[in-house]
Image (cartoon, rainbow, N blue to C red; front, top):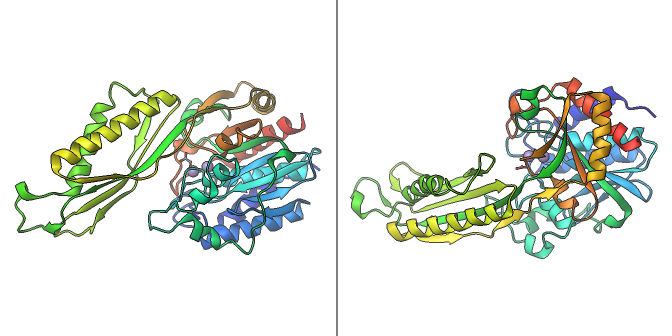
Length: 392
Ligand code: GLV
Ligand code: MN
Ligand code: MN
């Protein structure tokens, strides 16, 4: 059967309806939310209609299994709290369409919690053995819900873990989520490597007090500690980082978050990414030392949460070569090899089997935002390159 471009686009738009939010094509579909579980049930039906055997594992990863042995394709269908319609969803729906159209057996997967409500690429990290399930169960989201409690909401669907031995390799299609392809005018990126990441929660504990009566010199204001920390690491990182290194404080909780109260606690996420594990380690040392120096100076309590992370990985060379053939056929001279600055399930799956990724452009490089989008003709070009790569 040939690729059906209209069916592929219709399925992508249908998936966006689960958790549709914001302007344009925005989506709010965090892992284990009602919208996420409803989307997974819908995907299971689409897999069945495509002749695949749907299978939910204990963490909510959804597989559509072909006969053995097969090539595994897919990505994730959970989203960021404010996300777009393509991040993850594109790879899952493209895999479904390739499975329908390919002469070769293709299994499809939608991994759970790639977006890290609880960990970093949680579902594929657990499936690949990188994260221990019983330890992962005690990871909490920003509201204090544990992964163990969240995954219990899918208990009625869950069966055992799928044996990875039945898959010959893994291919994930994804939007680039950055500006490179959009700026160069290239239509396709073949991924060479994926960066490494570290992610940790840090808390400063001071003294909550009255904002009108507490003299400035007597305050132990936790927000002031966070603010100093941020300024200080930007300076102390200077001799360690490269222009490709990134770091983000993306989630901040100031307690009790009231205008007339000196904040007693500041709890925040600290995330950093780079392609060199040694640099990631040096940055960790700077982060811990800076936080300790500031805690000592401002008389703060200091706590570090569990350190989560993934190592940088290279994509499989032979699978890259297949994707290059597809890219060159569909977009002669208008594709490039490139690293990924975003994290992907492929990082974990590369531990289990040969893994590779294909990117299509993100308009203006925007992602993790309701405004994320890609021209539909570019989505279709990527899909054709994928099917050529798979069918040879
Ligand atoms: C994945 O969504 C990432 O944060 O790179
Ligand atoms: Mn993604
Ligand atoms: Mn994402």
